[in-house]
Image (cartoon, rainbow over all chains, first blue to last red; front, side, top):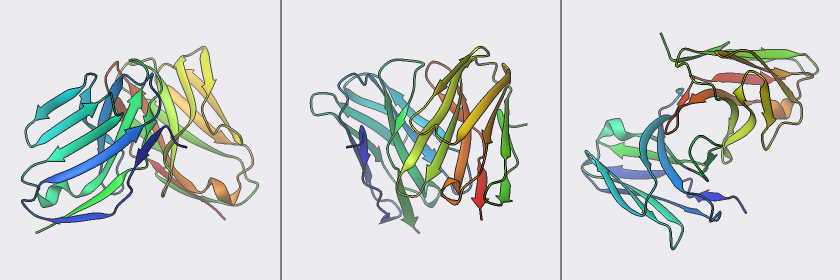
Length: 111
Length: 110
């Protein structure tokens, strides 16, 4: 079993919809959680970073962590075609160590 | 200029050949990483280095070696390339809260 599981998709939604992307993790030592966005032919870029259970908002993006159920989510409101990318969740036991990535979910926003 | 630069961007090589992928960063961070990305498998860690004198194996280091020439430079070598090493390779450096990735090297072994 992979330490971080992520539905690979692909996921297609119409422009303006709310998108929900999800991951689960199995390592209880994971304390830090991130979402990376990767456009085609580019390296991943950090989208959200959090270390506590609950919600963290940044513009149209909300990261949600539930440590009791080991569940990580990313919500995108008012989705735009420019949000079309692969989204990777990642976790690690402590700051500045080794990230473990999910497999990534490929998202397409249809105009 | 990009914070993390990888060369080459694309490479086709033959089975059995030795190949080196190079990475340099301008972020000034000590930690550097090499990952490979395969469809359905995500990013997997090959090697990582916490400073010039510290090199560590990741989860899939067999068939690879690395060299940390300076704080800013971290190269990955395939001693004898094989077809299942065909993949997209990423170098990264990181701060306490964020990893910065290069643009990737698409390697094809034929």
